[in-house]
Length: 396
Ligand SMILES: [Zn+2]
Image (cartoon, rainbow, N blue to C red; front, side, top):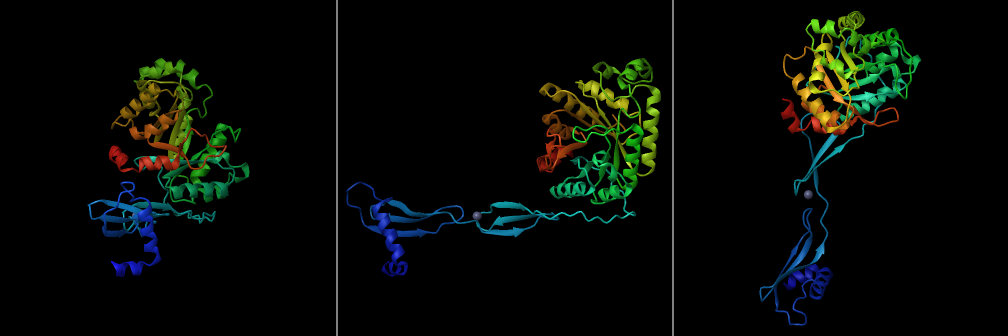
């Protein structure tokens, strides 16, 4: 004991003093029995350090606490993961993951021989929405979202300033990633108001496919200015053709009804498919609809032979979300539709849950800007859910 005390020197003496004065002072004023053993326990990353005192009468106490130490991390990898490093503490097994901020640039090599990626070829499409004014801004936004793990991108080509709606600019955007890009040309966006005719929208989408886009968004009202009128007027006609037209009572927007109105969209779809591109038919029905009405509308829209049918329906109450989920459940049963489908309502709950029930596209935003509609789900949140082992089990 004397030897060890000597070795500890002043520090041990101080510890001894502290021990006598504070934590181990018990039985106020009484004589303490002789100390028979003293153990110094070093701090670790899990527990504080302390000095343990054993006394002749069996009393044990601790004092002179020292703080926990830092974890001692070892780096390790799990398969082919990019832009992240995993660490594990060699003492306690605690794990942490660091995401690397890799500098993104706007250098693009356009490879005309590249095999076109497929937008519809996955089990689920966790998709980042890109609304930018210039190709460089769009490329940076795509590459940042790609680092986070986005499976694909929806690029609003109509948001590009007019001088960038060229084959060369679009090629840089479509070739800046090996992941699929869906090109969208909407006439009106709150922050990018455009006044494009139907033919101008179709030309811009066709140019996007020529530039390397995987797919295009064909709006349900293209070349049809009276969708609901035509739908009501031809309800009996379509019923005779074998369609359940019960959804017309909900007054959905953007669904063409006149038999002749499907000729141009059908021809456009055929021409895009012939170029090797895929077509997503999008309907922003807005109306609140029952599950049965959503399913009937999807089957009606399936008559144009597109690759994906996207339906955005109205309502944000829990009751309407349950209808959306029931519709997803029915539509995901084999044989219901020839196209893939995507359904969600205009609420966060619906956007979050529909992909868990078979809806193909999870619309996400990587970085919120004034141009992004903040009702979209955060990309990393959605990826964490869809990439979780639990969801892989559900989606199997
Ligand atoms: Zn540790």
